[in-house]
Length: 117
Length: 109
Picture 1 (cartoon, helix red, strand yellow):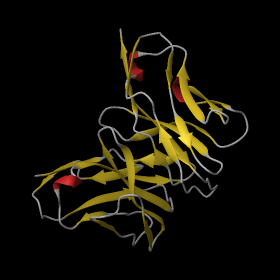
Picture 2 (cartoon, helix red, strand yellow; picture 1 turned 45 degrees about the vertical axis):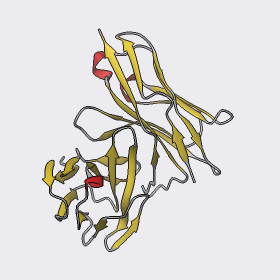
Picture 3 (cartoon, one colour; picture 1 turned 30 degrees about the vertical axis):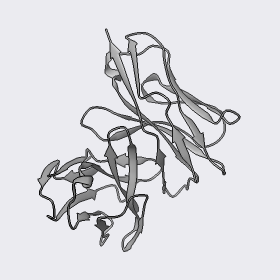
């Protein structure tokens, strides 16, 4: 079974500052990792995913994440945030990933990013 | 592109009432899912389907039922609504990534 821990429920940051949202996972098998973003009153949207290969993954809107197997982490980073990045961010893990498109994800509890001027 | 469409967006139910949350997708995805989202709890999988006629339980299936008669539609039924089912419900479909609907906010009083 897999589990995900997002250590911060809320992260306040000023516009144009860098940000890191932390995610740690637990799994007894190889994992596939994802970050989703949820803007107010909307569904979730995929930011980026790690399936294999390079441990540094780049996503949409200038976000990137690094897979660290020894520390079982998949932290999300952005070098300079905008007001429009204010949203809730969810880390998720899957114990398998099929090219047919099936995913059975376990989500973290979310981190609310609050960007102020 | 409509993507994943959920109805209704908002609903208030009395304890013991029944209702169906509708979900339809126009991307021809085989895989569909129902999640519930509660504050500070993230998303929990209720049910999922790997194709028409095939469904299976997720983490929190109690109090819910689903059916999948077509590829496009995956309705979620609440038979006897309880206050614990007050939540935001998300339907999703997948092919390489999950595509989510905009959610249905349900309140049970």
